[in-house]
Length: 445
Image (cartoon, rainbow, N blue to C red; front, side):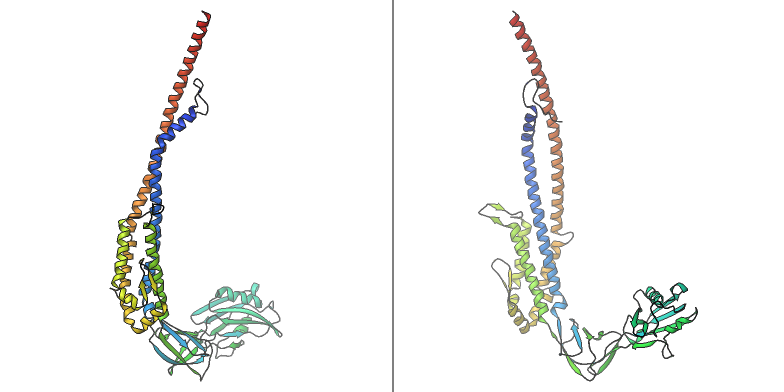
């Protein structure tokens, strides 16, 4: 506890004196620790920025090197074709004649009319099958109404196989059952058994006689491609032509439309533009963390850092080795080491000589592969950035330990100063008492 009053015997402000002496003792070490801490935090921030920039560059290079970018395809469909199409890099360039014969449809059934949704039907057991889904439904006396049957079906189905609704028409309430999947194989089949037999009103098992009315038949989508017919349970057909997905939107029997699959340079252009942006971000980040401001004479956190010089030089060297191929695709190297890309020149260069792009971006010994390898080494769990991070973590821990030790040492010093001043105060108090006594005795003489 600090002394909060002046000395009793001396009149000195002991608390202030102690604080000033301790502060003077603390300052040199505290300033040194603060300086190291500021530098450490600046370096941690700098390496965080570098890691983010390099990771962005690595991701951009991954996209640039992928076959989806280099061999991208574009699917073009004639107007009012009754279908849409998409193509992946696996699709072959060419044209296809396509006729949509029919769309896929889901089976829909409706019961006869009942007075209302609260009408009592009866008890029993229903078995509903749609494709590979089979539902077993029990209806007891407590839930024997039309809406009770609907609820029992939906509870058992939980959105799979069939969905039940009640439609209130002029003639009464109808139970409507919808298959949840399209296709002929997913047609509904319903059998009733047990109970009082009343659930036979919902039986449907074609071609046998049925009490349910078919509102919509279960049907497959059917298309012809270059004269070859294919059926599908859904309107989306992705396994007829490799790399091409066709989605049927409208049946148009007798109408043949053309699907054209061509190379799509826009995908590779976008990937190249992302690479240029990410590369420039890396170069600019290196410049930011290593710069020196001659006006303010302030150096950035990694100014003069050997690692940064090496990384910067490595990036520049790799681009320098590919400068001619880059230029052929409209990508030029600026004076500050960043890249500039001309979209029109890129498309023209790609059309003129596609081999250039493959050499730069797709080859295992091309520019993209070399840059990606460099980023992988830098960002590896045992790479140089991780090593620097570990060193900074240890330094941060050491700073904390030094600050704790300094606080403990200053606390002990404060106690010693306080004890010394208290002793001095007591001594001066005794001396004042002695002085007063002697003065009194002398006055008596």
